Amino acid sequence: MALKTLRVGAAEIRLLTALTDGPWDRSTIENALVRQGWAAEAPDGRPAVEWGGGAAAPHFFGTDPPSAGIGPRVELGAAPGTDDGQGASFVQLPCALFWPAFGEEPPLPHGRAAQDDDLEDPETDYDEDEDGEEDGGTDLDEADDLDGEYGPAWHRAPDARRAHFRAEYARLSGLIRAELGAPLHSTSGEMDTHEETWERAGLSLTLHRGDDLNTYSHYDVITVRVGPTAAGDGSGGPGPMDRDDSAAMTAAD
Image (cartoon, rainbow, N blue to C red; front, side, top):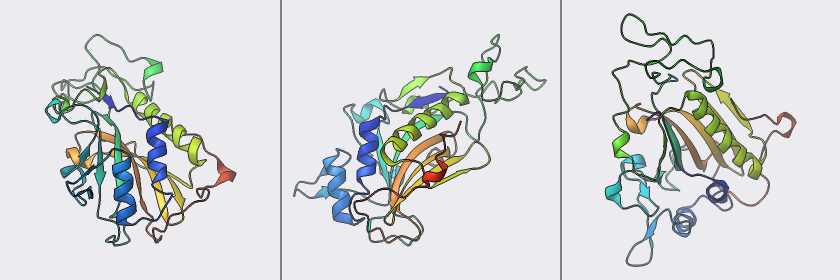
């Protein structure tokens, strides 16, 4: 399956931006996660939040049973108050997965020609080469062999191209811009990586597209991450999100 997406809309984006409304301290963030349904309460009534596990100890939410496979989850870094100033403390929501990783395209089915309207680069030649690979794609014998681990909460688009993955990034960027305005920073790198960042009173919200380390680079991933900035104190607080209004950029293609 080339593209998997979660149903992340304006409501979910507002939940993430709301994490910048107060200070980045453990009690504030844990109680916010419980209110949002992204973490549960322990029998004693306190939030049952396991920090530091990342994808190894994610907090799943939604209505599908665990036996259905991986569903929506929030990934957590170090607990607030233990950050080393290098972005170790965060709350992150994976929103979309694309196979294959590293900026590559999935192989086209035999007999299907590449279409200008569904390819990032319509000049790419997808004729099969002598090694059984399609130029511009991956080995025809490869497959998204992790797809079966993901549950029905993920919408699958098996024929999607990388252009559709980039379009999902642009859609999420538009939702964030509707709440916060233009990002303060926007950077691109190799292998189709792209990142937009908003900052507010020592906290940052980052929309990232790139290699998914949690699947050992099997996928590229889109995530929304909230946490203290490297130079910030995590104080948070009300007020407009810092942004460069003089250069209101459109979302990356």
